[in-house]
Length: 325
Image 1 (cartoon, rainbow, N blue to C red):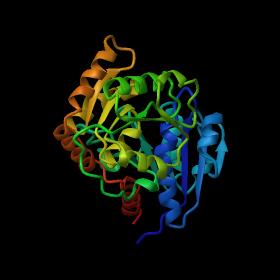
Image 2: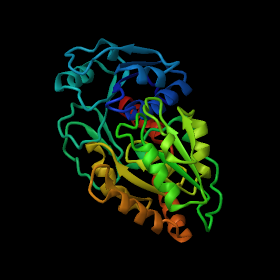
Image 3: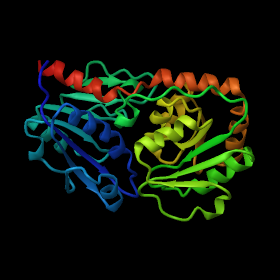
Image 4: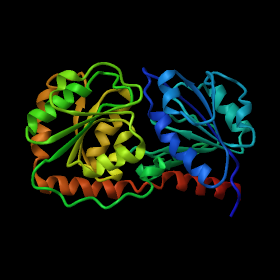
């Protein structure tokens, strides 16, 4: 088998932009290290990003406008950014041993290399300069999600609800979503996960167990125990699908609209719409009422596990080896 080069990850993350780029790229970092290769991060980020990447080797700088990126020289270079300029992407393509671009916005103008677009739904990108790898099976995941235990049988009643509002809870939704979960399922246990960059107070959310900056293994186990989840429509959706958690999505950023549209078509999730849409609370409660059905949740759980198998990072490594052979 062709020996892969070391890995360089160029990305961004902070309180305003969230930590989703960092979270998914961590799966690539862990896979490359499992093969004995070195990993370097180049990150435009703040203190929330620094806390998230504790223990990683990181060069902290803004790189998205650079016309020359020496860190990429000879490496597998993964660029995961909404703000990277055409010059920066071209510089990566020219220096890297293999260039990979993570796409959420369905852009068309990537230089030669591989493009990972893991959102569900059809997308035709034949004939582009780059080779596109499309669909949830390509989503990179932390090592805790490469293999997961079998879920418990679907319960007739909702005993545990998991609420996740994103790594920074940008819209300050966590406490309100937990309160709605309590209203819909007054006898259930409500677990609210607060990410590494989340701010604010959730004391008004009622009798809720609050978890902060969980290790991936702990988060995975909470997901496996949850009867359903209410989640921001970002990268955490793939982990929920991997664990078979029936999930209600709320969009908290414009780049999540495709998730809101396409995940329901897989059967794994329901969408309540964007965080600021009129009538959101009523739609959330209506969706939760529909998810009270054990048969509905069983179908959603199976659909999620079918869509995501946790092997996206290994698949990309295989593709890189193929093109370098």
